[in-house]
Image (cartoon, rainbow, N blue to C red; front, side, top):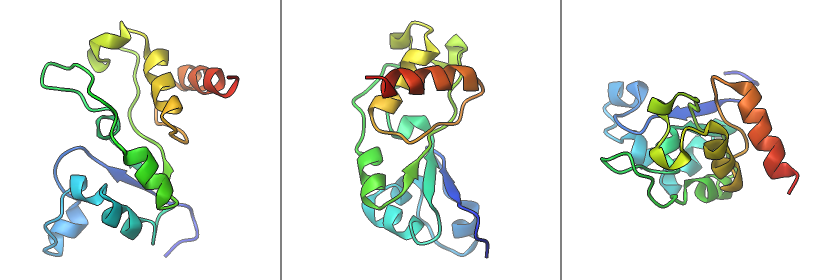
Length: 133
């Protein structure tokens, strides 16, 4: 009911409250499959997924191979803005060695259109370093 561009936030677990309230049992993880992304594209300009839906981590916090979510979302004509990027070590997988910009650079290289961060200066540094190449 608005002309504002919407970004559908997507958590890495659970289900959207509004769908559950209507008896729809789909989870957030089901919504990031191609059919769910196509549905989201009917009302939103993009998605804001938890960053681990793009670069998962195992139970020990080690990085796993990136998923196809960015490519799938772009194929559905959706922008991708993952969340939340922080610089504190407890929020960074060990492979980044405490370097939040390195994490952000990886996501920009994977093709995200933007990202949510508590440190916009670092996010801009990461974005600009990828654009220069």
